[in-house]
Figure 1: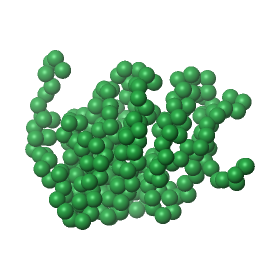
Figure 2 (figure 1 turned 120 degrees about the vertical axis):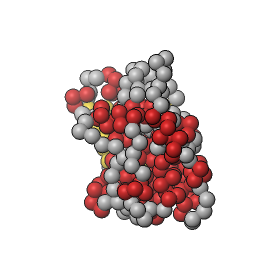
Figure 3 (figure 1 turned 120 degrees about the horizontal axis):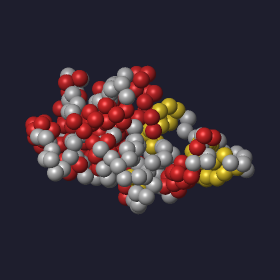
Length: 267
């Protein structure tokens, strides 16, 4: 009110206000995001509590979520998907360089303002430095966008976010997520145990470089994915101008073979 600024207020549901872990996660969301200042991240201005109501004060973004856009229009053009993808990777890369792993990248958490700029929000399960907020083996994140290691309840890192970015890119290019089921658990298991249809199978005129970029991002083994947001973005920029991409050498046959090889009893 003092500055005459329009803001968005995120309020912790009343059923969680007496749950110390939820309150702490809410506080950590504010702290993690408030330390980040980037044009592709929703800005956090303040957080507090009044009469038992916990709230976060954040930038108000006039527009819609990426999920709403895809539901309204279906698949996006390659250029539009690449532009949004580069904005998303700029935000994720910035967060990673500041020690923050988002862990819940999904189309619902990407806001598009009136100019089409992508802004990432909702750092509710972000990890900044230590994993102490979650119990070992717990699964956090939204099932349709979970990296395999995240679905298994294993430790996650920056490459887990990049897998989720790959899911978002897949969704923009094809109009659908790679895996879906009737509930969260079977959806999460698909990320672990199945290969998605290649985007080029669903969109026959899709440039094959984009197909390779998406499939590299969705590799089951984090070591076979892009290792940094910068590497991922470099390939997207090359695809924009028709240049060579590192994903061209990604071996889909090896991915299928790896998936068909059962884990050892000791794994």
